[in-house]
Length: 318
Image (cartoon, rainbow, N blue to C red; front, side, top):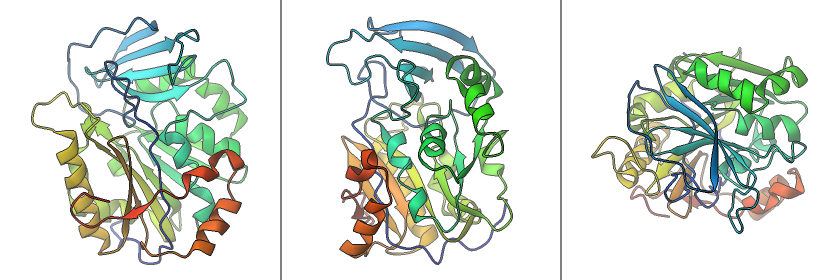
């Protein structure tokens, strides 16, 4: 992976609203994508409104696929199919099989799909691919974009192909979707760099420890073309880790501090929704006409996500 200097030509910040969290099984919070280290935790039982579809164990994960009953009145994910990893039961991907024509999930994956209009070139790396929820929305709304996804666990990709229509997505977008099985922190950029990078890397129910180090962010920044951006799922208080002492709020703050140290003062913007935080690398001062221009280039379903960013002030606050 390139260790080139991190982004120096990034334009105005793009707010990434994480939707209301729906990840843990007990509180239906939505946590980020992907897992990493091998472990054998005791999984939480599924709530009554979830039906188990598949149960697979790999060297990296206990993988479960579950369907939310479409008759779950008032449930934000009624009718959804979920990819569950980690002992606490974190949701790592969401799809709605009953509406295959619509890739939106009402989660932060939809916010990731607001990024392409701001990129200097139509290419994105997704570090933490899961079952492809982010990629599905990106490929649906932007016919010219190419997506390279990295996922550590080959069993997650196999499950995604069998139960989340990933095989069909790869066939329908051959040449535009490339999936790499391996460590996302060893990913290499395409020639000239990616227009943007989405970072959604968790292990054992917590943001990867490497992401609390500025050098890691400088390394990831080397994948991005001049003028490009990164959008990052930083977790927060809604995230329950398997390891005691990995408090979600403290890990989020440490991740943001590392990003600020890597990219400089005024180059990180944040968004908080129900204790869930997303960060964006970009200057924090931007004009209303720039925001309007960005919104005009978005699909109507995504335009409401714009007006939610704040500059990161170094204290974990908005």
